[in-house]
Length: 467
Ligand code: SF4
Ligand code: SF4
Figure 1 (tube, protein in one colour):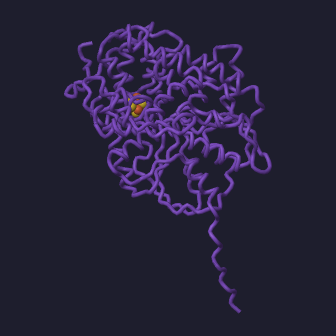
Figure 2: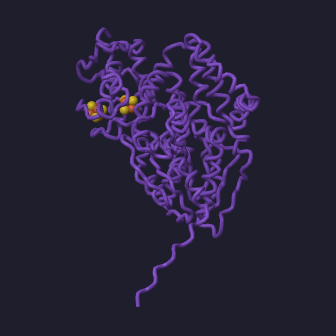
């Protein structure tokens, strides 16, 4: 216990200690997997890709350090109630960059999330935190209409001009202590659409032309209420590509926020509901334009593996899930005819490139848009600092990580940065606004949709055949 440091940047050691024990401390079905913890060979390859290690240069802020801490707790050499343990588990972004590079298959991000669930179970949280978590996770996010209702006052706040006044007064930036989170929330808040997309979309949107596929659209909570325009583009792109789009109105949150907070009971409830619901339609695919939703719904098979009633059905469901660019690259994409004369770069959402291993497909799809000039961004798979609600719980750290990303965006001199996750869209939009970078932040389907709608350029005059 003594050799663990509570974020002290001058004391970088971690407890490695003696070997395995007969009975690990964490034994719950959702606890960190002890065998996976033991798989760490301490090679240190993961250090180079970890945003928190590269910000602090401390072993305890590295994937290897976090695995060592979990092991020390599991083996009874460190108290799970140690403030240092808790702090280092919550400093992780769960970006999973370490999992992509690890030669031993150590799932550090997943181990950390499981450790958080153990911490939450043991430690009585302040009543306000407990109450807010319950209201948001177990009430608001349980039904899409409640999420929509919760955002209605925000829309009103924007429409009556109060947001402009609050921003001009810089009042929220002056709030003391933990209330300063309101300032960060306000900075992140884009202008909301007039209506959530779910209220406008038909349950079945027919394909344009001949139907090639029938796809279920998993409309994420944030995409529905914040990025309705982007998800509308996703539906347009799908129907343009011969897909009949089924958007079941009763679908619920994928459970990603619950997974991040260690609420596996509610997560399973949501997973069962969504499996039941989508099963009612005879679908070729289930598609999502939110990287986090696609990653989470692909994990339903693993999540429900011990439930006899759901085991096989959850596997069938998860096998059908595709992130939108993954699907478009697979079916394959109908070539757009309109030209988009813009310089484009691409930011990889962690939940897409690290959690799902989807890297090639978005680039393939983007590069099929006529007229674009694609430029790769340095460290395109480096987290932007959004990481669920990390930018609200750790605003200073998140801003430091975002600034590195923004430097790389600026260096591309791109007109547009594309990214396929609402958290990244929010974070990058707030970042470019704050720093004055002249780059628009869009979802890939928005540019693709625009290319389908644009008029094709008149064909150039063919050269005369020489006689
Ligand atoms: S790369 Fe994997 S095996 Fe190597 S130190 Fe990191 S977690 Fe351990
Ligand atoms: S998930 Fe990300 S932040 Fe956490 S240890 Fe791995 S690389 Fe570091």
